[in-house]
Length: 395
Image: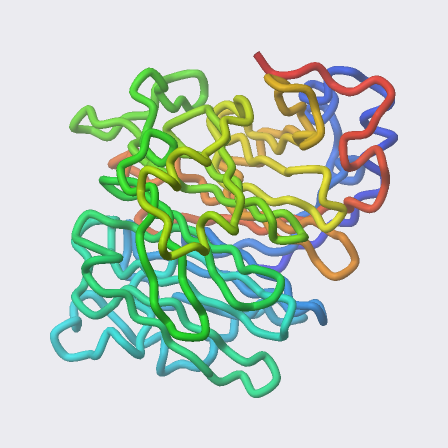
């Protein structure tokens, strides 16, 4: 990993106020002017990012196109990567899978999230290359940030993480009692986890809200993104966001454009039938193709990654029915904005995983794909989308 800071000197609000076409404004700015800054670059493909309450930064590297030498790491102040919680958890190698226990090794980590109670949670779908699930490998692990030791491991059975699944992202209730996951695999679903008992169950399994939208084709650089064998992007329910009060959960598929939500008390009711849960799903509007979602602590703004546009967008959650998000920042450097995290001071951190540049879609690409971690300030009204003259919605 290489550490490459270059401070931004122009506040996002100034950039927004100077132009109603933020995309062109950002594309023309020099590194010293852009409202975001590069925190670090990595030699491998990154997806998740988490920032603890005391400002520690964590990232993860899934085994998609390579047998990555590190799965979860802390980004140290000098820019180095420290395997987390230790080297032993990061020793899994696909070539040695028959020699290692998947229960206490990172097999193919997709997401890291810091909660409000001093823990880092690691979500491991255990499906290298998003292919076959390693038996006994799917898990959600809690690590105490004071001791840097795992304090709870919730292993998922085949009923929760069957073959074809890919547990993607996770959010936690403010009271620390429940976790909500997306499954972006062959048959999309949400997973509800009781963190006290460790019991988990699939909901909205196969429901239209958690599936790919067949009329959507994910594009990159203006062209439909396809593998060499002709297959396109097929990620089902992926991005997920929870309101600060914990009352509503939002999600959408990557191969989709529609944002959905549901009241969490419905999800937490283990006695509710599939039909009852399905009846409570609300269609919020269209985001366009999106990967990561994050509702800021203010609670009235959702940050939306827009990989087709090399951009981040912002959605006003109190907006009119049918409203769409507006461009927050756009730059050709932002190749597939992926995961989002809010730091203790309100700074937004986000990764660029460069999926469209990976060997999955470009056979000549290096298996070890350089990727980036960025940050930008979200401490003003302008930076959270409440402008008097906002950028126009993307059509």
